[in-house]
Length: 584
Image 1 (tube, one colour):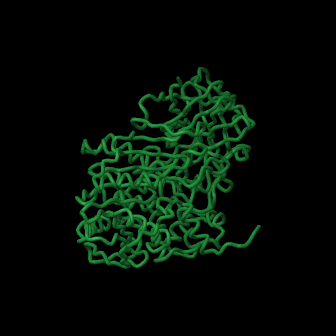
Image 2 (cartoon, helix red, strand yellow):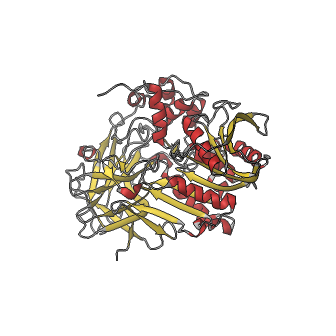
Image 3 (cartoon, helix red, strand yellow):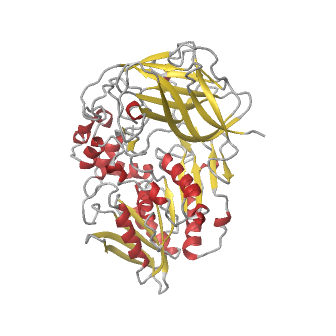
């Protein structure tokens, strides 16, 4: 087994794997000959608070542009120091700030609520220093992507460019709340970031913690009483609490070029997809629509780290010079260097399976063919050994329904490490598919390669014996060996089927249409591969368990079994829409 790893080191390694540090360049030449250091520089906010920043800049009398990073993960870690030296060596001031309530900054940390105004104040400060040329660029991943996007809508004249990596969308949209469904691992993130320094949680049995009922008490199982967690549980609908924390609509008024970066297995991928599409097609400034770039690789939340993810090797091209790309990006927008980056294709996508990069003019690609794949069976699609099939042929008869029993005390497992750093990947679901509460629908093996690349949507016709329940769907690439590789998945909570601003409980036994968003994927199925869809009512612990009672979400300690029925006949053609690319 080897020597034990100290818990503190585990936390640092975990943060690196999560991807918060993946954007920080640490090349061999990270020590420039002369850098001016300034630690704990107090930057004033509009409400009188001061936030702490470390500043690294070249020892020169010339004014230089600024790279700003705002983080809840400690601005003084070694990786930040290396990044500061690297940027200073290339003619930039690097300002890395602890967000409000973290590290040496004033105030109390409450996720997101201060990031727009605090970010705007910090950008203004960076743009008006004697050593600044007035142009500020921002970079960072995950929460550090949020700290870029929140102030961007405020149109600060000093903000010149963003490089957002794995930035989540509005918090109700995905993290921490996925359209009314909480993800239990987010509580481990809250506990990790509670207080002023990172809290090691490696001693806790997280898998056991996630079993906690009521859900609202889960933070206390990790030794904390966290107001944000209680608030998230107490606001299951899209109400003013969440609307006040939203940024995506405000971003449409931004006037800053953005490079959006993510991975096909990033668990907040939807943020990158939606932010790019919205700004490239709906930004109020027409020029702004032309200043959006998108790059999605074969990565998880920690981008560009390895050619492998789980059991899948994506080939030698899977890792790119992301540091060099950022440098060219900021050299152009902050220094005015004509290095050609503005003339490069706006969309770069990694085609998994083929394991090659593709360049495109837009996303989703106009040439994709939205192809419906319909669910079929003779009434026994339960498990990998059932009779479920998936095909482009719509049902022409009154096919028998499929039924399964959903017990929230024995939910369908979602394959993932227990903490928040990476939620799922290209995992093999063969073992999970042996369960009778998983319906499995599979195509014939393809005779020639098929390319799927774009957004995934599905319509499911279903009924439940319960007053509320969940419906889950997963798309998989089944290899000739039987390896069932997850591509992506989605969930819908029945009480929100009429809209997320209200709760409408079910009439038991009533057939309803449910729309599921599986985000997107991009893969090439080689000959002999098959597409597969799984349907169930849970994916735990990625999503919290619906207790089926129709009672107050997150506040009950017990639930009941739901008897579920899936329809796929002429009147109820359950299907998934697959974005296929024409093959030459």
